[in-house]
Length: 179
Image (cartoon, rainbow, N blue to C red; front, side, top):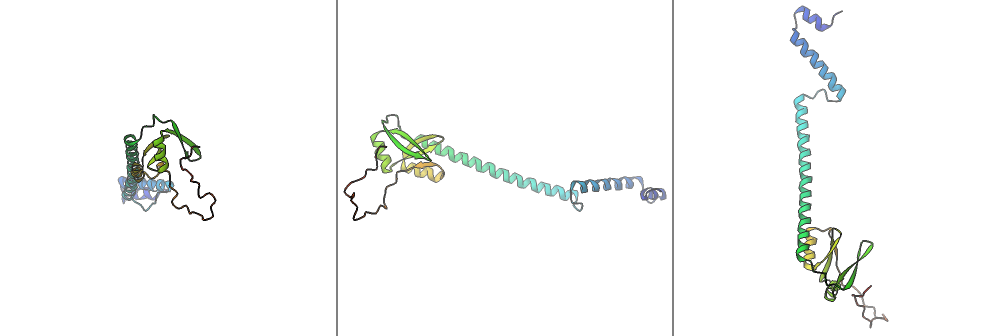
């Protein structure tokens, strides 16, 4: 028994070109079903969907790249500010101890720098495993640009309440003790 396609060709109701097109369409349909492509979707619709997906991926990658460039620019600005405004610590003879996470670090400073650090007019900033001593106003500008920068400030005890029966009220506790 011959197939319907052969019968139509013998009767003259279809030609060889139409037969090839039908065979090609049937193979394409079975391939699409095998690959999981929606059969009702045309090639132009698939191309349009892929183009839109590619455009959204490109936008997302461009946004990530722009954010990385902006972060690098902020870090470069912070480094430039630190290089310009840092104090020279080469003549330091006194150790100033501070806490970085769970580790106690120390810097060698002179007496004036130690007093200014304990008052809070100088600030220690940590960046790339290095520590810089800068004025407090520079530290606030750096903190505005990069809030996650490691900054050590000496805080004054403004909210300390004086107890009337405190036996140690006559003794002043200096805030620049050496440890």
